[in-house]
Amino acid sequence: MSTLDSGTNQLESKVGGLTVGGKVHSLSAWFVLALRLMMGYAFAYSGFTKLTGEFAAGGYLSNVAATNGNPLAEMFAWMGSTPWFVEFANIAVPWGELLIGLGLLVGAFVRLAAFFGALMMLMFYFGNWDMAHGFINGDFAYMLVFLAVAAFGAGRILGLDKYIEQYEIGGQVLVERYPVLEYILG
Image (tube, rainbow, N blue to C red; front, side, top):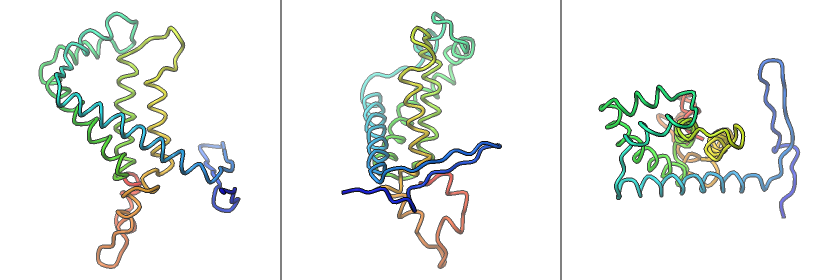
């Protein structure tokens, strides 16, 4: 049975002059793990199917934003009409999805993977712009899931980041020796 341990399950954050906080249930770790694995599978599968099938970003980039009132329509049109960018997207999208997904599935470099996953979802959000149901859609929600996975250090929950962070180099723990890795691991 899980219980609420008020000593270790506290959340608090200060941004500017505003402080928010609260207590979380110990089962929260399982839900954070579930979010990480769900997004990992979704992205790994999507990337794999793009790599093994026919994928071409040019048509999407050229046409998606032109008809839906997208505030970034000109940027998407430029991306779709610029050959080097289309070639870049043809490689970056499927491989990015696959690597982001694998990183999340094994729990390695989770914050880095989640950052790039959130960035991709932000681009998909604008690419699939539709205000018929307001500002929130599935792409926006997935972006927030990626950010939550990063914020909660989901790679430390049954993931390799827990072990990578504790790896010692010359008798010093990796993240103590290289503190910037806290922004990539976790």
